[in-house]
Length: 150
Image 1 (cartoon, rainbow, N blue to C red):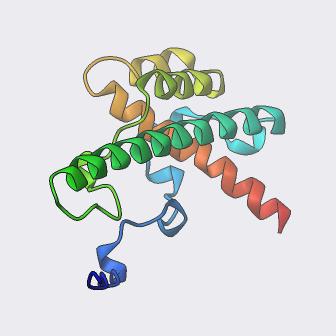
Image 2 (image 1 turned 180 degrees about the vertical axis):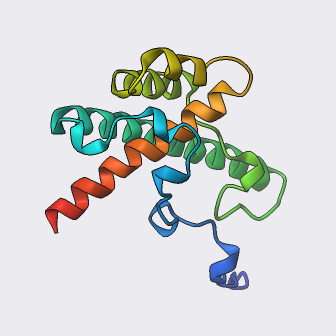
């Protein structure tokens, strides 16, 4: 009879934080926040559309990571190695670039000044700036919707 496989439980500092464990960032700390209209001026139908797009972006990334974990584990098992419990951080997949661009484009109508916003999300570093702003600003909507429900 094969020996029972034992695993050492992961300590909290060893596991990757879940999205819910990561404290929400105040949008006012995000570069470009001053370019956006206040969230309370955005109708709920637009807020839910933007939140759905952001959820789809996260879900697509998680599906890709699950596929990659399965591929890596198949390779590891074939090589006689222990499978990973979680995808190593160096293997994590980024967001689908088209979906990320769509999220950034979708917040454009809510900029106070379209020309200034376009300048902010153009040129070198634009993807990082635009995605950081879009995630923080739309994420703030999710907080306001969940706090309204309480």
